[in-house]
Length: 178
Image (cartoon, rainbow, N blue to C red; front, top):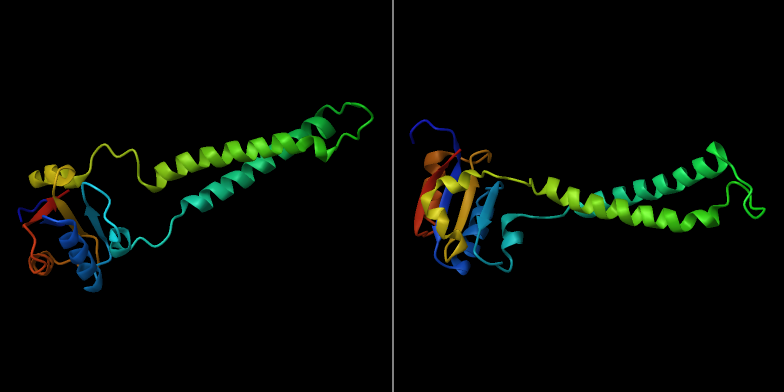
């Protein structure tokens, strides 16, 4: 505790089962702003951390609706308002002819919204993350498992959180400087 701003408290575990159990106990203790890191996917870890829902489908839906409306209104404007042409005796607002482009614009906008929505909601790109300040975190991609309680959590207290995390039987506990 040297006066640097603290990002959180990190506990290191040597197995996925220990990490999963520690994450469940941390969530049950009332800590809500937590994150877990492991070298491979762990079944049930996302639920234990507290991930509930995903906003990407809503972003894709909104993007698709905007794309469909853009495609339709663009064709309507061009064919009925800006430059009406009599093509084969059809009326200027011939909606069946607009279906293909409307569908394609819906798919295009939904796909672009999915990519950029996923990047934005995941906070990417992230060239720097405070957990890399802990030297032991280099083992997160090899054979170690880590649990972090963020200092922005309502229940976070440096002394009490350290005691709690040491009670989870970790390999080590470290402060994560910002």
